[in-house]
Image (cartoon, rainbow, N blue to C red; front, side, top):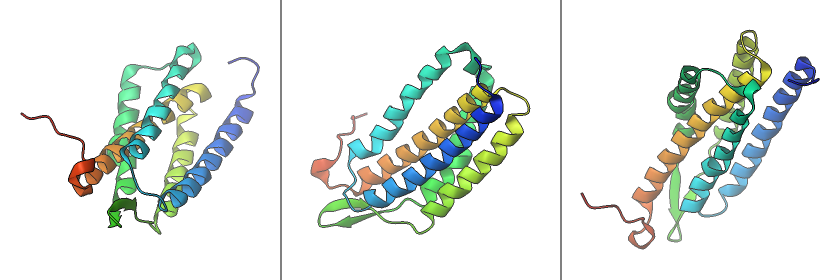
Length: 168
C-alpha cells in the first residue's frame, strides 16, 4: 500500500479509534439532553455506510466469508452491551435517551477488545484488510443497536409520531 510504513499506519489507526471513541462518548452525553427522533436513530448507520467505498481499493479486499463473520460478530456480540445500556424515558410528551453511567465504560471496553483483536488479526492480514474487517464489524454492531433503538422508540412514541406499519 504505497510508501506508508505499516507500523505508523497501525499507530495512526489506533489513535484514530481512541479519538473516535472519545467523540462518541461526548456526543452521546450531549444527545441525552435532546429528544430522540427517527432521524437521529438512522443517520449514523446511513452515514457510516459510505465507508463501504473503501472496498473499491484492492488492498482492502478479503474473502466474503470473512466479511460475513465480522458482521455477525458485530451484530451478535459487540452490539449486545450497547443495547443493554440503551434505555428511553418519556418527558414532556417526548422520548429521551437515558444517560447510562456504564455507557462510557462499555465503549472503552469495546475499544480495548477491538485493540487486542486488532493486534492478533494484524499478524495474519494487512493493515488495510484489518481496517476493512473492523469497519464491517462496527457496522454490524451499530446497525443492530440502531434497529434495537428503532423498535424501542416506536413502542414508546405517541401514535401521531409513529411510523405506520403495513397491514398484512
